[in-house]
Image (cartoon, rainbow, N blue to C red; front, side, top):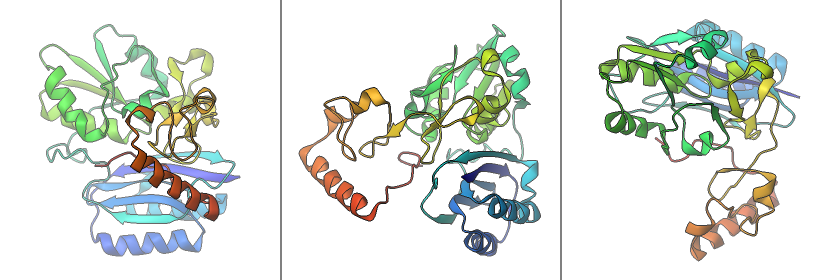
Length: 302
């Protein structure tokens, strides 16, 4: 059994190359896999390892950036969730490309999972999902707005085209682990929205803390590792991933004539060219031979 840690903290970090080297060494010494992103604005990532290995990494991150003051969520995976360890330096730990949006300077009001249902039930609240379309397809809070975005950077466009601080007086946002909605809340404040709330710890903390019978969550939660999605109590869900388009797929999707493992599914078959299909078949054959499939990553980035 693998212990999985999803973590982030907005905190000003200095001497990033030295910090990168130290953290990577700890990860390698403890056989930890996954990805950690470092930027001057903070740290973000998901990693897996043995319980002792993850505990050693957490001790390092506590010393270097007081990670316990941010968000850390633990869960388990039956199989190795990632292939290798990557510790990368980035301009942003979550890419929005809005320089004025700085959670180290201003951020919306945190709402604990235990108080989230009451906020959602407030008729004056506009509830917005800040995640991408392939994530919202797996699950979403009842009554929430799905902005139908491909990447988080498009969230700015949605706000510009659909939101008005004189009309939406109260705005509440959520995402997988809390990092995107935290940065989104900072952005909303720069645009003149005054009452901005976001779910502390994200959907994962809500699913972990709120009993299923009290939950307003509909579906499962997409996660960026080989589990693909989790449900209440963070139990693994029966989703797979189309490695042609990286869209989460169900058993019904796998039974479709449009499904070809490693190549296509009902979500991408209509846009798949012969050239693309052939390239994906060659890639699939290589992965099959090596018994390794690529990690789940956010599409298109940022």
